[in-house]
Amino acid sequence: MSEVTIIYCRPCGYEKRAKDAAAALHQQLAIESDLVPGTGGIFQVKLGDQIVASRSKGHFPATDEIVAAVTAARH
Image (tube, rainbow, N blue to C red; front, side):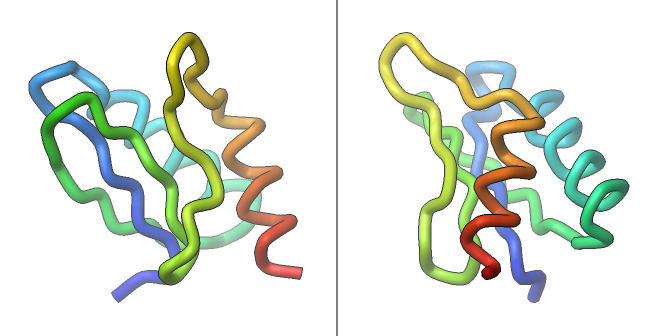
């Protein structure tokens, strides 16, 4: 199991965003991410059991925000 889990809504079409975030985490922090399909509009990035970034009404975290959130949560 990876340190980072990205849960995304497959029916909403968030898979590309999840893959892009996972690629950025791998490239910039050398972290592997588990991609977990979900439903209901979910998009969450978890470090262990802690949610470090998520979609909220009117805001979708960009890959740089996700990398920064994971970096901050690891320290």
